Every structure is written in structure tokens, then in C-alpha cells.
Amino acid sequence: MNYPNGRKGVSQSSLKQGKTKATFSNRGMTLEEDIALTNDYYRHANIAVVHKKPTPVQIVNVDYPKRSAAVIKEAYFKQASTTDFNGVYRGRYIDFEAKETKNKTSFPLSNIHQHQIDHMRACDTHGGICFIIVKFAVYEEVYFLPAVKLFLYWDDQFQGGRKSIPYDQMKVEGELIPFHYQARVDYAAALDKLYF
Picture 1 (cartoon, rainbow, N blue to C red):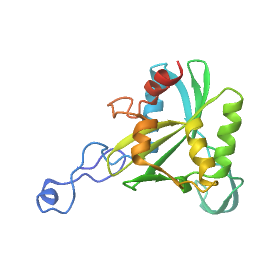
Picture 2: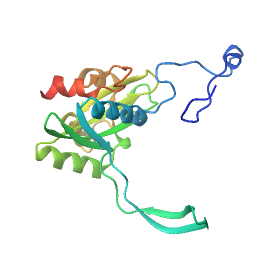
Picture 3: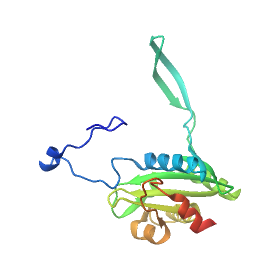
Picture 4: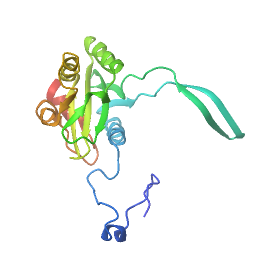
């Protein structure tokens, strides 16, 4: 069976033969796809208005094989992007980054970039709510970590500290976001708990 998004389904025969590991908790979705579905639900339910930010691209070379089909052959990023998502929730500006890691013991800070930290600090200074959502793929766990806590780890790495956030610390300092059917990554619940 094929899914509407074009992905192939897993056949029972391949499961029996051990060719594919069956996992149903995330159904093949990436963290960003799950957040996009959550944001759609939030908009339709009038909970929040949050969108993925487009990455600014400069198109250099386009091929027009036929009038109705243009193919981009060469393009460059105009500038470093800031964070993945932004919007408004309960009258407050929110801005956040979504990251996945396959690491079992920690979230490497190398997954974040200095310009993203600078952007979140600027938004935080002006009263915005900034955070990261981190998925530990091995455990199928998603955590909400406020940017102010991220800043401490970020700054500490330049003072000889760790270059990662230990998984055990993420469990203590972050908010676990349980998987839901409609709001797959229900970060609004974490916002309510921490800010409202």
C-alpha cells in the first residue's frame, strides 16, 4: 500500500522476513513534518499562527525545457537563515528551531549555529519567546528547551565546558512533549506550562 504523500508502505511479508523494522510511533515522519502538521492543526483550531520560515535563495540559472516546466539548475543561499519557525501564540511572538539527533547520550551543540543563537538572543531581548525542540530519534522522545537554558550551555562550551547537552540534563531541564494524534508535537502545552 502507498500513502498519499508518495511513500511506500511496509508489506507484511517484508516484516515477517525481517527486512524492515516495524515502528509505528512516528510513522516515518521527520520532526519538521510533525511540527508542520501541528502548526496546521493550531491554525485550524485557532490556537496559534506559526509558520516555517522560507530560506532566502538567489536563483542563478534556470532551464526552460518547455514553457510550463522550469528547472532550477543553480541557486545559492542569499544569507544564513535564522531559525526554523516563528509566529504568534496567545499574543506573544514565538521563534524556535527544530533539531533531531541520533545520538543516544547527548545533543551536540554543533547542530546549532552562532547566527541562530544571536537571532534568538535578539528576539528574547525584545520580549519574544525563543526555544528549541529537540528530538532524540533513538528514544522517539521530543523535548522543549527554552532558549535561556540553551544560552547557558552555548556560552559554557567556550569556557571549556561540554560541547553538547547531556540527554539526562535534557530530561531534567527540558519539557518532554508527548506525541499526540492531531497536535503531534504539542509545544503549546509546554509554552502554557512555562510562560503563561
